[in-house]
Image 1 (cartoon, one colour):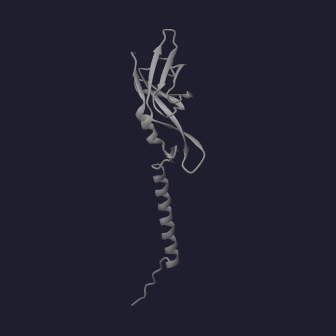
Image 2 (cartoon, helix red, strand yellow):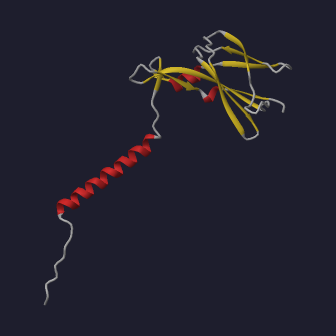
Image 3 (tube, one colour):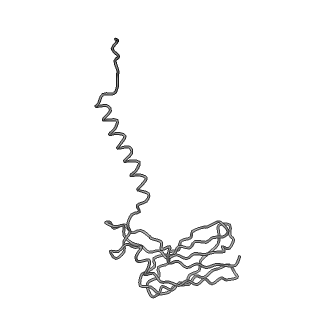
Length: 158
């Protein structure tokens, strides 16, 4: 009977390949999962999302026949609103406009705004969202946070 010589990977090379495969899979899972974990922004030592529940504001849009819009905002809550994000939409198109309006708690503000789509047409829906600023947990970097659950929605005639 003839002796058959089988050749294969040495145990050291096989172990090294398995370790590299495990590390590669761990890296892929880490990068994938990192997209689900957002950095935590805090204000007054609390997650800023909790402070959004304390935001209480009313917005009124006054349309001028000359093409100017006046946005009146009353901050009735006990949290300062650092800016306003306005989402204008018409049909299936949506655009975001940001305005640096500081509205302290208990105060009101009236400003002229240009609420048009990029194609110069009037939107049919306007969402007015308050923006708070907080610190990234463990750091001193200020970051804005849009409170999407407490916004005001205005529907306009087309």
